[in-house]
Image (tube, rainbow, N blue to C red; front, side, top):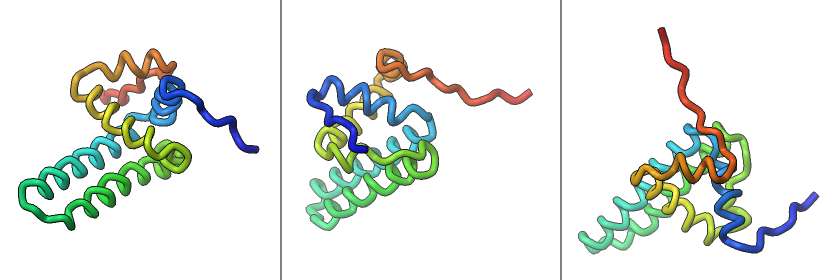
Length: 118
């Protein structure tokens, strides 16, 4: 059964966050986004266009790995490529800026904390 298409970015953002509910999935995304940023900077500074290809591969590979192994869902990129790309960077910025827990709560995602040993 085909799900209804999301019509607005505001709706998509909440959906995106729910699809990234597990901290491990988000960690894989942070890795991919970090590698993408490094490749883009390297391409600009070093004038190496091959790093643009690497940016795409190194950005998506960890993110998709996180979806398939941790979240066990289908990456939103497959249905909403541009909104997903933008949201990858938005989630990364929210994580760096400390506003991600609030965004997750607004989307109805309960923050999962690692179990403490002891």
